[in-house]
Length: 258
Image (cartoon, rainbow, N blue to C red; front, side, top):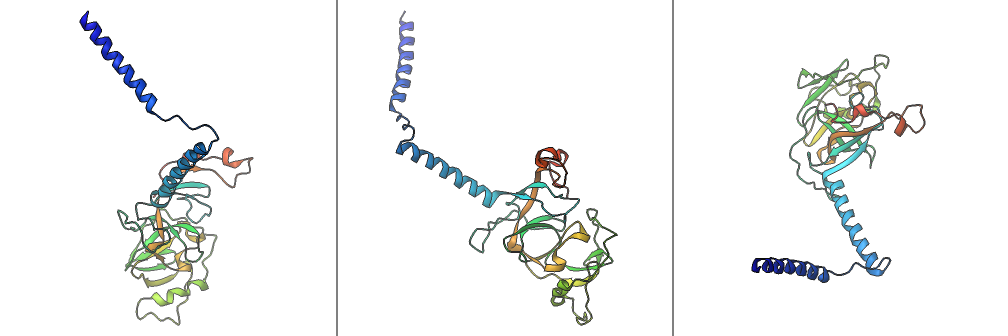
């Protein structure tokens, strides 16, 4: 009998404590009151700060809208970009958060374009600081060795042609190269030496890519990150109603080809 009373007392005490705890909580503010609006504003402010932090320093989204990286990345691919890998730039400063690695040969990189301010583009890093690059008949040579590029797409119907914009390379030709006779073309140029903190970027769709051959090197500080995976894809050229839904490419969702 005494045990039952003791148990009832303990249980009663727990109920009393729970009720007391509920009584101590402040009641929720009335809907549409000043306190209610302030509560919602605080919630939205916290959510905005978290979103901006993730968007600025951790992850970003990128939509492929040109064919310069085909067939690695297609027009209509939606890509999640890892901003942590190479270190994210700190907004409104020249500094950046340290990454956990440096760009390597063959990396696909999203970067801010100098030739088109405010535009982020994606290319493949084919030359690192200190490399000597040149191209002969469409074959890329790095430090005297032909580069194996299984990802490259060529179009034999698109003939080689000179590009006056490539004359910038004259300032980076290896010593003893006659500058006056230098006439670079899309498939024949160099040899040039890449300076410190600069990278040479090219598209995989080699005959239809506006890249470092024409507009020059990419600064290390302009690099935004590396593609993590394709989270959505659709055929933007499909002649279907609402192609975003009717021309989906679910087979492309996942890590992008390297």
